[in-house]
Image: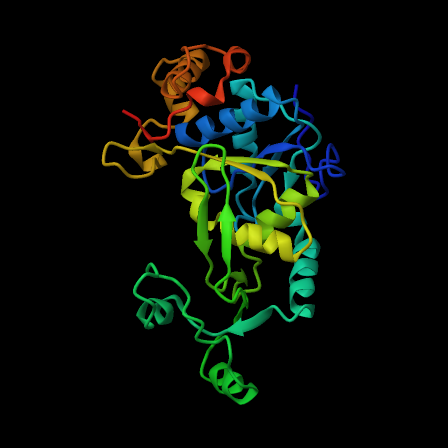
Amino acid sequence: MAEPISTSGEPARIGSSNHRAGRYAPSPSGALHIGNLRTALLAWAFARAEGRPFVVRVEDIDDYKTRDFGLQQLEDLAALGLDWDGEVVWSSYRHAHYQQAIDQLTSAGLTYPCYCSRKDILEAPRAPHDPPGTYPGTCANLTEDERAERQATRDRPPAIRVRTNRAQVEVTDRLHPPQVQVLDDVVIQRFDGTPAYNLTVVVDDHLDGVGQVVRGDDLLPVTGRQIWLARHLGIPVPEYAHVPLVLNQAGQRLAKRDGAVTLADRLALGETVGDVIAAMATSLHHSPTRTAQAFLDAFNPTLLPRTPWVFA
C-alpha cells in the first residue's frame, strides 16, 4: 500500500543518496485522463521491474488552489493498484530549494534578466533552422543603461534566463535514438517570480533521489535543457524513457474535453478498473491483464510501441 498522503515538501528519502528511484509527477490541473494513467502505469512498471523505489510528486507550482485535484489524482493512482514509497511530495513547498538553485546559477554568471514578451519572441528574427518560439538572445548582452530603459517601458519585472551559448546536448533515451539538441537561453524564473518547470523538475528529481524518468514523449524536446541545468547545478542526470502519448480522434493530445477519458468517466460507463487496465495493457502491446500487478509481472519494455495510441 502507498504511504499516507502528506503535504510535506521534503524529499521522500528513499534513494536520494544514490539517485535510483523512478517517479510519476502529475500537475494537478484536472483529473487524470487515460493518457496520464497509462504513463503512470508505465513509470511504475519500469521502476518496480528494476527494483527501484517509486516516488509520486504533485507538481503544484502553478496550481496552489487545486489541491483537491491533486488528492483525486492520488486516489486514481491507488485505485489502479499503483503504490509508492515514502510520502507524496508537493512541489509548492520547495520554493526555497528552487531559489537556491537560481542563486547558484546567478553566482556562476549564467543568468540575465529578460524583458521580452511571448509576442516579442515570436516576432523577433531568428535563424532559419530554429523553430518558432526559439529565444533569439535579445536581452542576453544588454548594457546596464539598456536594461534600465527596458524596465522603464515595461509594467512588470523581468524573467530570468540562463545563458546556454547555444550549447549542444546529447540526449539518450531508452525508447528513442540518441539525438543532439541545440539549446536557446532557457527561462528559469518567470516575470511573476514563479520558478519555471525546466528548473523545478531538475531540482525536484534531485531531492527525490530520482534516477529514472519515464514520461510522455512530448517532453523529449526539452530534455536537453534539463540535462544542461542538472550539469550546471552539479546534479546527477537521470535515465530517460519517453513513452508515446495517447491522442484523440483528431490526432491531438488527449484532454478531458474529449469525452469519457478519466477513470471516473469510464467507471460511470459501466467499465471496471480491470477493463481500463486491460485496454491500456493492450495498447502497450502486452496481454490484456486486468490488474497492475499482472501487468508488472508480464512487463517487457522491448514490446512497447513507438507510436501514439488513438483512444476511441
